Length: 459
Length: 82
Ligand SMILES: Cc1ncc(COP(=O)(O)O)c(C=O)c1O
Image (cartoon, rainbow over all chains, first blue to last red; front, side, top):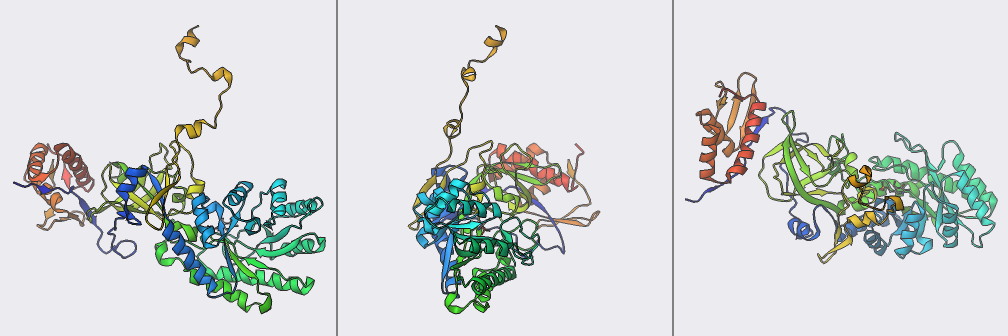
């Protein structure tokens, strides 16, 4: 007699009158393939866990953002935020689409140069630019966004030795109605500091003041804040024209658009609440178009979005290591990717899915990473189907900040794969090996011998 | 080990505990096992019965079985009286 297919026994408590948190079914659609390639095959070929990027999604997302802005405003330029993901292949896709580079360190600057970005298309942000970095940026005609007065004076000083005139902008921080206000970067608008900086630049006569920059925060849900920020930068531009008859070339609104990930503690999923590119574009461009800037002087609008452009394109696929019950009866599932790889699990409720077709039964589950550390929690509580050891999972929307903030901690960092637009996977960063790590170390001579057992001590 | 005797079990896998007002749902295998426990079968008997009817290794089944009975205890549906 044919035996019946077995499904594991399950009992679930029914919470009458308490619909699931979002009032929607908690049935979880598996992600069985990425860009047409079965997850099982990706893991067989590239190991587990593995980061997987979809080139098609990057290009599609970029084009959507581009359309939202370029249909509303005559001159738009994106600059790819390197810190969000500076894997060269990812950067190059953005550069091919027309993005400049936005960098915040000498290291990122050099990466942009090796990715073939012309010096004039590199925006150099951040509080930490060494004298050498600044000299290089001036020589290459890059756009230096001044963060503080010490940097401004350093640049004035460098003007003495440089043949080229530095091309600069100032970063402005301001009250846009959000709390907490980001006031640690750039010069403050409300207390007049921004004007102090502009006056010094104009009076020095040694630099070309090309732009005004603000980056008001990250994962900003209120489009109104961008409207306020654009109003304030436009007011500075109008003031510069009145006072110095100086027309700036660009206004850079920074990044900060939310991705569709769900923030911890959010009541609704991010996919329902995140404003669209059109919403952000409308807030920003309507402010600039309404401002007193003369139409013939409308500056180029630069955007430095990171997470909103790359989160959706990145996946992390891996394997279940084990299941256990916690003391209170809750189920715990241990997966092979921890917070060392998925840094963003500290602030997102990541969208974790089975990679196999499983039954509709779900259970309140805590998802732990493999690290021997209490903080290694990928999801504190998720209605999750019953995956067994060896079953595979996929975490969606992990493209931003993980491949730059990941830690080599306890385990090695795995392969990163990009599936190109024809559906062919390529390794774009090789998994680390013991040698990757050991090659950076050196051992003093007196510790070289590894024959350090009992022989020495008993001598 | 047995099911507390005031627990109501419906044919469709619906379980009601009148002492707390809690209700539960079972999948078909869960219901089958709950009924086998209620009829007084031992763990070994249940394992034999299920593994002869379904495509599942004994060692695999037993893991799921203990996980399942620990949930029954968690929900106070099962009392130890063996
Ligand atoms: C100056 C600047 N621009 C752009 C970004 C990208 O931000 P996001 O990923 O929130 O779009 C950042 C990130 O912190 C930033 O500091």
